[in-house]
Length: 422
Image (cartoon, rainbow, N blue to C red):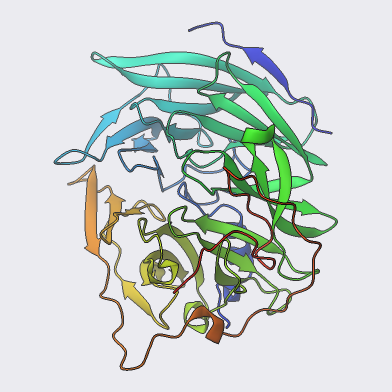
């Protein structure tokens, strides 16, 4: 079992992205709002190079990244909700290590996760006159060899932050900011977990990809019930099924699974609570490229198939942006702005994709890209049920849902009320 000790603060289809082989597999578990390269849950903590992307709050007000000055790295906060974006450097007394993680909160402070002498320390940085203020939050020590700690994507509320400590046999979920007394241990989950996707607007339901018995299945951790774990995605008994992104408004889920082609993960979509199976569209299968979704258009409450989805496409000649709607059969390919913080961005409710970028001439910029117009068809648009489903297996019936809080369970059972795609 993973044992981590707290040190308190001393201060106040059929498509997919599976054709790129190992490169695609390396990105599967880390796709989400925080999409710096190589962000697979459990790989954080002063290891590897500085991520080129950035982390963005769920409301799109702030972003944070590690910026570079000469050979030194320092945290940088971006304000995105004003007339013009601007950056505030939050350099401390010494440069940051390449594996340092940063995450913005909704009040403008930036959470920093460092690995210092084997201890995972957390603090909040904020502008303080001409300098940077720092509020230590405490540390997490993991004596078990091989345990890795990393931040989860920003919580929907923007006031709390979470991390996972991935051990050999289990994963511990921590609240590292927003609690009363520094890092708080919330739950221990059997198996090795990766990924991290929030399923609701309150920050109660968290989807993780759990590896047990040689298979990876997405599960839900209910923070409102003491970290209770329940199944979420089970497409086939022998498949690896991961959740990449979720939109709480429409219920749209973007997943990666090898159910339709064992050994090759494919990009698919489903609707939480729908009676329809997961789809694997052919159009998002781009030979020789890795396709990773990084943002879903919000506000499309009754039309998940009409949500614009932003895709990061990595090919032999570089990276660019794709825009796709689950109800359509084509991907629109767009050039990324020069200096794009690769894999970062967010949608507005009215369908404008905002892509942060940094160049020597524009060190803090955001490109606004309107979504391509939806396809116009002379015949009715195909409903998801017209796409070929993946192989499915029977599962035990789900437990009844709480009346006040919908509880996600395996998509193949589709037990959640009347969330439909028509």
